[in-house]
Image 1: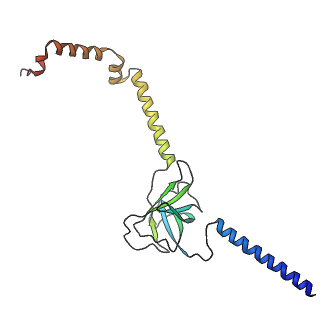
Image 2: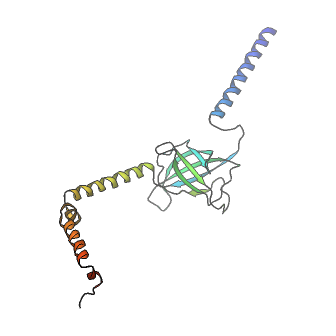
Length: 201
């Protein structure tokens, strides 16, 4: 009987150690600490730009927290919905109300994250329940799309010029402008005094 009790006690201790290792591993993977205190606040944007729950939060270029939730909310008195991010930060990261929040990307087309940038450190500290208005920025996809559109339009203009369309195209595609410039230069060489002659009224 005593042997069975000892064996059961050993098994219980092993299970307890395994559970402790499992909990520590989970918290280390999610980059959290046992008992670490923090606070949550919301940041509003016109669009999430592909940023989702669990996204990283960086403050002054340092990873400090995470996005706990992404919700689509229609503000009272407005017909246009907005995206609200619930942000978690540790209690030792103190932000002022003038902190700029925007959605950024790791690399050109990498993972989305929330970037918090300190400005002058003015206003009250952000605390649990504070609502911050984020700064909307153009996404890399929008920039690439606009660049592609501008390049397409530029190519169309070049094609029209090459075909001699329009006033500029006609000047470029014909020799009239070239001949006129040569005649003007030759005339100036023969009669340079005409450059200083005042036209008669």
